[in-house]
Length: 105
Image 1 (cartoon, rainbow, N blue to C red):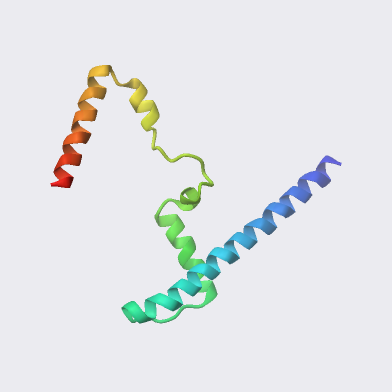
Image 2: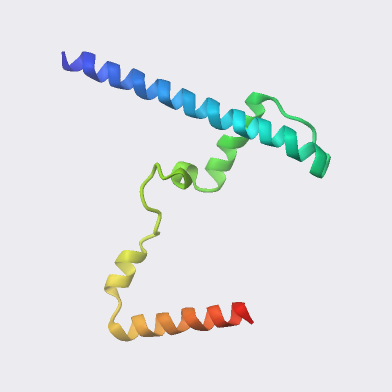
């Protein structure tokens, strides 16, 4: 009985994954073919090239983390902040404010 439930769940996950890949692949395909040839003079691409481009971009730019599938991506800042002393936290805040002021001017 449990094996059947797990197989059903696995099949459902596979189907959802295929639908997501097809949907994002089609979106990349359409956006590329509508924008890139006119803006940059690049050639149109096929659906499978779009899926490959999507996979490459996920690998290069952090995977599905941007979709919220991998949890929070805080790079350990919470733990770093908790290990700081109050003086270190104040220096950090001042540094951020100085960077912000420099960027605005």
